[in-house]
Image (cartoon, rainbow, N blue to C red; front, side, top):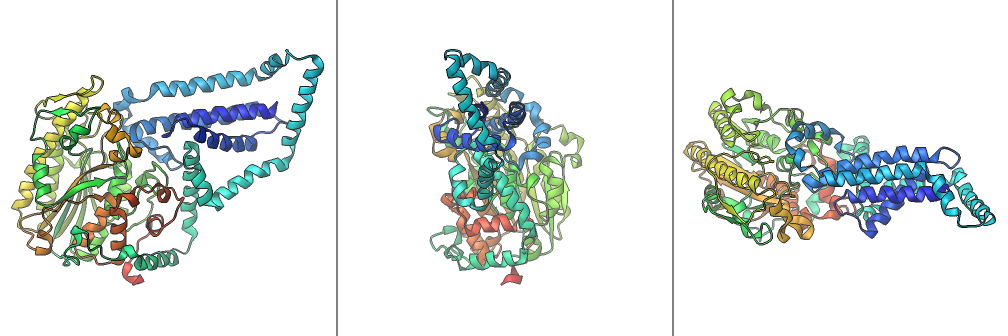
Amino acid sequence: MYVIYVLIASITMSFIYEYSGLNGIGAKNMMLSFLLFLFINILVSNPNKKYRRNIVIFSFIPVLLAICNVTKVRFQLAEISFFDVKLAKAAGDIAGLFLDKIPYTKIALILVVYVIFVILSKKYVDIIDFFKMKYTLEEQNDIDDKLFDIDRLFRLKYIKIFPLIFIISFFTFTSEISSALSTSSFGNLLISGKILTQTYLRKYENEEQAIKRIIKTAKKEELAKIDINDRLLKDYPFNKQNNMDVVIIQSETFFDLPKYQDKLEKNGIVVHDEHISDNLHYYQNNGISGIMHTPTVGGGTVNTEYEVMTGYGARYFARGSIVFTSILEKQTNSLAYFLKDYVGNMKTIGIHNHNADYWDRDRVYPLLGIDKFIDITMFTKEEQDDLVGAWMSDKTIFDMTRRQLEENPNTNNFILSVTVQNHGPFLGKKGEDIEVDNLSEHDGWEIRNFVSNLKYSDEQLKIFMDYIDSRQKPTIVIFYGDHKPDPNYDIFKNSKYYTENDRQNMFNTDYFIYFNNAVQDEKLTSLKGIHQDISAAALNRYIQILLGDTSPVSMYMYNYTKDPVNYFNKDVITGIKDNTYRDITTNFVNAFIDYKDFD
């Protein structure tokens, strides 16, 4: 009877967990998940003991994980991983705003299935006896004998060797087994555990030798060469800059919604205001601009932040992991460090009009070379009260960025300004009402608020950029949206454009790079008006290249990550396939490298 119970328990657990995942319930997913749970159930139980109690207790763990998984999938199109333990606090800080969006129906179904399983477990012997009643007593005894013989096999200790061999091979022959497991949600959870183990063990490697090997390989790769067809590199190498302010504006949930209005909802929406993004379009047309591919959607802001700051991929540790909270522990090369070393005389400042410890920024920013961090407590009371829904307005952060530039006129300045105004849910609005047709009754009111707030952001952007243009100091401004809104808004959920191709179109926003009037370098100003798509990771290396970086490693990273085929390559991201960029991403985090030492 033990074997039958273990099979039933494994089927139940696989249904619960795969139901919670990105790919849902499918024959292949269920079979893979079933085999995984079967191995684990054999390991945690024994027919000689109270196996039903042990399995029921163990099964509560995947139930809890499934509830967390279905919630994360709902908001971020990403599954939970072993790296998510530290996310509880960040999620709890804003959970109250999203209570109406939690997938209660799916959570309820998961709990109902589990409760039924617990009841069946308690009545298991009675149920088996009930089904045996249709047989004669002799036949019943014969069935009992056969079941006893099968169960006796599992009393032998060597039986547990087989699942142990699988677990060992999972960590040894990673590519082959990871490839087989990657479609299963529970398999992906285990893959993240494997990556967590690898990340931990990497601490004991000879770091210098590993880095030297990777840099040597990157330099020899074809991708380390200049792409003559890349219009952004037409005047490469660029001149080394030693008198330049660099300002990054990471705009919360910002994208050029009116540009995509025909692709939203089933048949498009109609925004009755042609001027929502006028200023964005001006700076795009008078700078470098295009679509920016991002590692996240609906949340996980700091993963985009991490890629823009380092050039390293945020998704190579586990699907859905947050690098700031789970991976980044030591000093790591970044744009801030590059500017200090290469441009020189550089003050590095981070600004975020929210709590300092949100996503561990207060701990991580110093590791990325940001010397001064301005959080919500350093804004005036009036600014703290300037809210859009639950979030401080973009005006407050633009004003603070301006003040920091004015306070340091005799140095070069790097400022990373991270806004929060357009963070969902869109409970309030700033500015005038804007009529939008073809929205659903369900959440259309939120989208109308969002559209109004986008226009307000665009207006505040112009005020700030007018100030930038008035400066005598050469200044480069990099502006981009960190991610698109919650993917379960009806404008996306009902759109074929945003649901096809693994929802890849959800993972992009818009960007521009703008040089103010004081920038006279012709190699830079000749780039104005170029439209070319890029990724968040590639943007990091391109900024460095614009300022004079000629490292072949930077060129390799830029060339690899600018291509969306590479950027979204699931096999490389999940570790099924390896390559040099994956090696760089997983080995160079928590490592501070002087590239010149390896030249």
